[in-house]
Image (cartoon, rainbow, N blue to C red; front, side, top):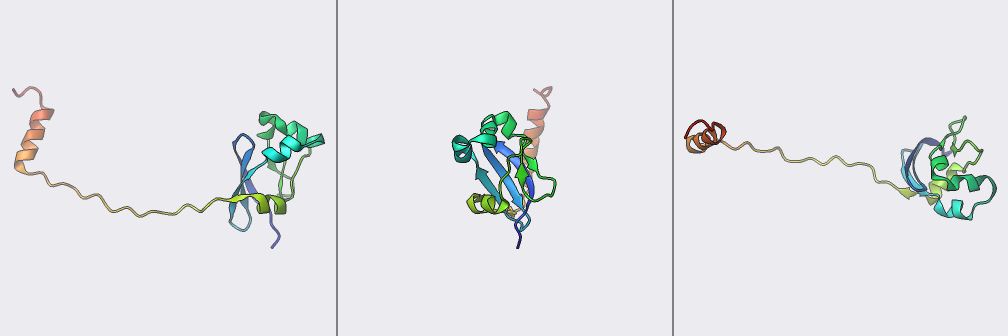
Length: 115
């Protein structure tokens, strides 16, 4: 299968959340690449510029306005898997049945005019 990026989201610092066409989502930290980077990667050190990440025109991978891009296979390989959200079934809350005594106590607390 040819790996492609479907969506990208900025998280914080130099981390991106990347959604791939096989349904997996991964977190990629670019800090090491950027700190060692030369040329077009140097501009990515500016976090505000880094945030301008977007999908390329072919919807194949990610890129920045200065032409910096990364191979989707490399992103897929180095990214940390994000587990899919699991739906947790919670038991239904049981309603307490009020006894006559407890309901009359509540009425007294609610209605301050009764002394």
